[in-house]
Image (cartoon, rainbow, N blue to C red; front, side, top):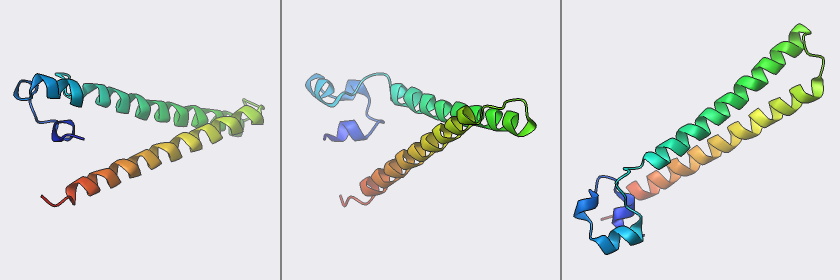
Length: 102
């Protein structure tokens, strides 16, 4: 892995064209990662909100379908666990990079 792939502050004009093609440095500045991260967070949030609404309806007696409510709760639990696991991996990778001796 090249340093250009790690440091987003490197301007594309400062990187040689052959390095740009290899390392994947582009002019987007990480907006693709930002968009994907935001979409993942929004998806987890939507799943949690759906589970909360279904649980509220079940508790108030509006919805008698316990199966879909339980499925929604499990989906919310799994998505939250996966997001926390991804966060832990990102923090671990960041700490590893920060501990690299130069």
